[in-house]
Length: 497
Image (cartoon, rainbow, N blue to C red; front, side, top):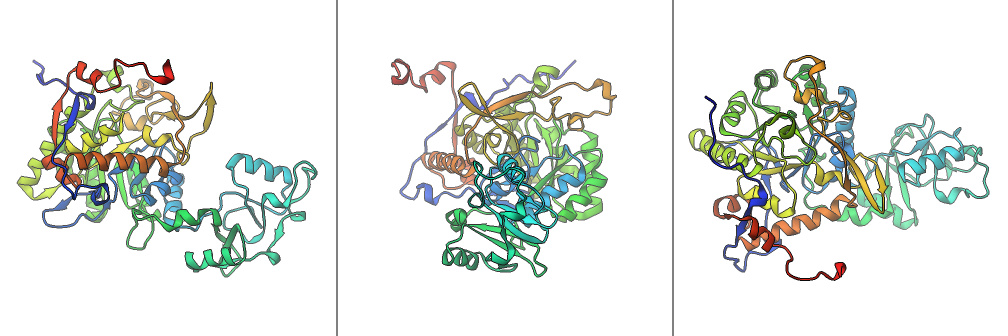
């Protein structure tokens, strides 16, 4: 006879937080959102920590190098999606590791032989008005000149006009030498009234641009997470098929942490992958695993060597695993049980295994609930897919701007390895959908608002950090009618009258 769980499988929507005593110390400025990313022993400091408890999902429509840079600069971490060729994933990792705050690798480049039509097309594609002109049209070719919108007039100039005839040539450029500090670069920009400063190496090869418009942004990034070499931290997703080839390439590229990407992590494939990585590379290589929804799955992955464990099956906004296979568990219930298993394991061994809540987040207050229920950090897809920095297209649908968002189990992603159970390719079916999410603008602007809400809520709970929230937070179940009571009701809203 099958084993039955009598407890109802619950979601975050079914809970609320009860206020605690808000002392005079409980102000948002005093709240710390630091969180451990990987396992550590009692009394020790984790090898890797987050300054905010957010990581981005291992998805094509979410986590590329651009989002990874933006999130790391704001205290979180991205796991570059693994459903792509090994070399291209490693290249994305390198782009993050090469990024220097204020020093931007040029992604708008042409040769002197290109035309004005090419400049206009490139500007339309990237949205950037500054184009680096190099001998081979690559970001690190020999710098021959620069083109900005001030160098041509679309209405009067011939589209076939060669770039070399209207670019500002290298001989007339003010440049900075590689190794210059950001403060020195900004001084040159301000002293010479420039909009941008190309940075070149000793062979005149373009390395970076420093832009005047980014000056304010560079001044204040207190949450930025970086490695011992002051390079931004980045993670990468792997699977249980080509890990013997993918892992060494990602490590060579500079990945700080890996994570096995699978809809169901309670499998011998994940166990073997973890054991191989730990045996081959030792404990210096950090790798997370998942996803699981109960104590048994958690213990299996931890004993195989997981440095953190992801919790959640079927709760993502684009995931239809529960619908197609009847597999999963309410995210709140799953998280509560795995957190209890994590605490039990800590008491037994003195080793703390961080857990990540993956899926089920709809509202910002769900984030605080997830943390209070035991999550050390949250993995989110839909939340980050809405921003400028995500890799998908921004479109206008009706009167609204949206961004594309698709699941790794959709036909579009075709990431069947994430759902692989060793069967024939003919047995693969969709476990994710192709969709849109409302466009929300820049990551930093939205993240600041979200983090402000989280800190304010924690103050109302009378706590100043996540561990305190987990130990002293008070949570209550709510009825369907109390959910209705919690919103605007029994009034006529002005914008609807």
